[in-house]
Image (cartoon, rainbow, N blue to C red):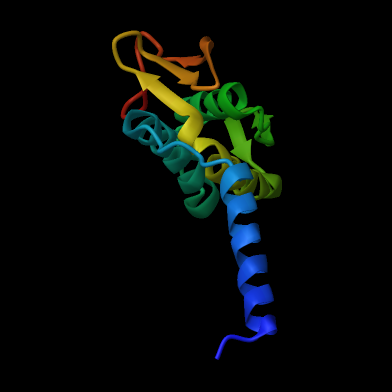
Length: 138
């Protein structure tokens, strides 16, 4: 038997789902080329933090990549032997994870131009593939 309480609950559920469905923003699907480039740079950073072994040039290239694309500054020390990971670098990786979760669907890789762009502002080039990339990185 349908009671007034059930009707009210059903109506509330319907109104909520209509409101939420109309007003929630659906993030676009992540571009596979953009994800591949992100993972290559993230791998360098993650390996530097977790294993402590890394190539200084690749590390700096990844730092610059994330700074340009996300605006998240990676904290590191520049010593006599090159860039060195700090305890803050691990925190920065967590900030990159959060940024990527929220924004990965807006990144668009253009292989013909070698550029990474934001789908919300396609005229803006976030990053351009270097002429001579470091080993394994783009």
